[in-house]
Amino acid sequence: MASSPGRLKSCSLALGGIAIALFVSRPLDAQTLTPPDPASLPVRLGPVWVNPRIGLTNIGMDTNVFNQPDAEGPQSDFTMTLAPVADLWLPAGATWLFGVVREDIVWFKEFASERSVNSVLRAGWLVPLTRFSFDVGTGWTHTRERPGYEIDARAERHERELTGAAEVRALARTRFGVRGERRRYTFEEGQTYNGIDLREELSRTSDVFALTTRYELTPLTTLAFSVSREQDRFLYSPLRDSDTGRFEAGLEFDPSALISGNARIGYRDFDPADSTLPGYSGLTASANVTYVAFDAVRTGFQASRDVEYSYDAAQPYYLQSGFTGSLALQLYGPLDVEGRYGAQDLSYRTRGGVNTIDDRVDRVRTYGAGIGYHIGRDLRIGFNVDQYERTSELADRAYDALRYGAAITYGR
Image (tube, rainbow, N blue to C red):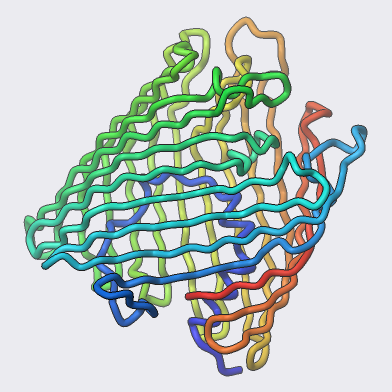
């Protein structure tokens, strides 16, 4: 049952893509950026180190392209996605310039309206000094992917970001830092869902300022704390504005360890500007953890609990709680299999004086399995089957869909 972490990593990338795509996490939960190991980057173009990856995924059938309820007659189509990605690193003295370029080309055979090219560009500067370190970055995203579990339309939108963080080592194992972020989410004109103008309801700017502390428990494990203040300001619907105070504590695991990723638990005080809308004060959580055992078993777990904005003005936000999990096994030589399951609950909060279903909870469940064959270290060919289900007290919100097909991935 010999294998390698590289093969299992390819398996996780190929078969766990659905869980990663559906998992909604806040960017500020990311671990502290660290310099790359040039030995792990397979391509060098002059002074630039490159980690290229490419996938031809979802080559198969989607039995419910628009996530329609059974009463409306779900429509199926053949689809596939080409996804080239490149991580770029350029050494500049003791510092690093970095970038990410990604293009997802989504194609449907019959429904040309659902075809798209989704682009992600990110760049930044990392200064990892012994006692003091900082990084700054910027990014731009243009996408028509569904913006979460709630909205089924592939709505065109832009996301722009500006981030910065600094840390100082005050003690042998302790670092104190600050972090700031600005993100702008803008839907294109004419993008609607259920008759609602998404540009008018959801376009916004989010600002975050945080104080952080990290303590090195072991060379591979770090204990992290943060206290932050957040502001969301909507461009066309100021009644949706909100302020948030947040405290978080968690663990960060080194990517080279058997357990990698991060897990956090926290408390959020979400205060909407609209006095008729109840706020939320309570538990939040996020996790993205992977465990590899005996070079042949890989488990992945992602979880989240946090406030998300709804397109519906009557119920402007919901508390999303859920998880996704996967188990990948290297059966023999180049052959692997994986199973996966996900569960998400969307608990809506209602504006005062509105006639609608109070305390409504929509539930999303996903089930999936796949089998793959590795050719060499980095190339994998697989076949996946996934079932999606959403239940709701609103009949037009419920749907189920089966998606199945092949996937070809190359890269580490």
